[in-house]
Image 1 (cartoon, rainbow, N blue to C red):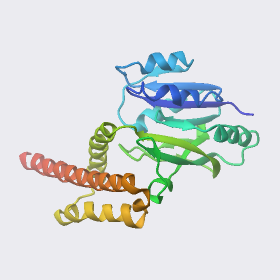
Image 2: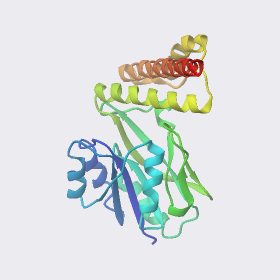
Image 3: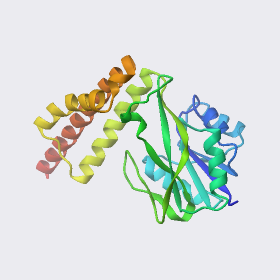
Length: 255
């Protein structure tokens, strides 16, 4: 079977990194690419016998693209620190790579919110491309929702990743602010604008989509909370996009 390198990018992930690395014990090599963590992330990674590389963080895509050429093996599996490979998925990866029929493989994520698995379609129709031949995959340069592009055939695996993005409401608030900023930067770079009417209508429509059309109401209080948070994120992102465009116009006016 070809060798496999697992890559995990980190910053202050001491609460997550141990469980993540435990789920990657099947890999032939584990690289933790850290961006100057100030907690115990690096020490925990070394205790798990991972190789730690330290690199300045510019964006999720840039960090991962920097890491990929450091992999020693033909196949690369990329995880975030808040993800876990199930034993079933680990076994399936090993079996698939005995005689691979593709150059990359998608897997489905099972998403959890405050420790509870969320099953409605807005959170469970979540396929991610994470396993690929080292020479065939690179990430699209974006600040958020970076996409792995693989040259060649892409298949799907049946096993799942477990994803624990929000263990507390503080986790959500921190990530909301960061993701809203990153999304706004992408919008400015790509020339996407947000009108006042769109900014007014987008959050309630995003709530209705998550709660009614995607089945958030089936999750009880957790589904209502997630749908409201989805609307809050939409509002924060739109407001930040409008603010960046306003500043850009002001800067142009000074020239």
